[in-house]
Amino acid sequence: MLVTVLPLDPESTDPLYEQLRSQIAARATSGDLPAGTRLPTVRQLAVDLGIGVRTVQRVYTELDADGIVVTDGRRGTFVASPTAPGDAVEAADEYAATARRLGLTLAEATRVLTQRWGGSDVGGAG
Image 1 (cartoon, rainbow, N blue to C red):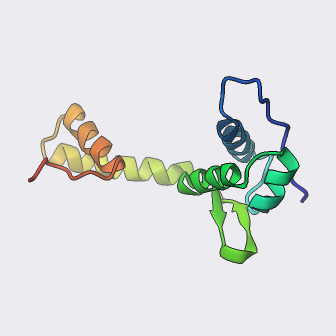
Image 2: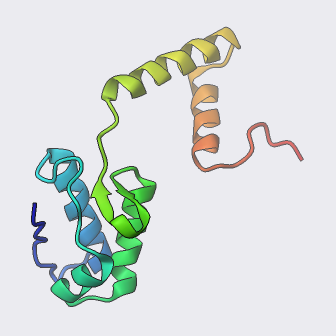
């Protein structure tokens, strides 16, 4: 499948990298770019869009971190298979049950999750 990316708007208040990131993310989420679709190389997409290679690399890196794409070395960058929503619901159910069993309030459980999401230590030890 040949992937075409819509032109970016240099007059937009959104930075070019955000326009590109949100376009690819939305298309992957909607199924317009099905799982397994190979994206253009960083260099090729930069040339096609007339933007810097580092800009495209940043987009691919952020999309990879968000689980929207996977980069497989020299093979390229591909749209990731979506995580089944049921998996997230199941994990949330387990966390909620554990938090309740430990006597945490919703606010406390949310704070712990928020701290872990950012990768900081829980409990403020130090």
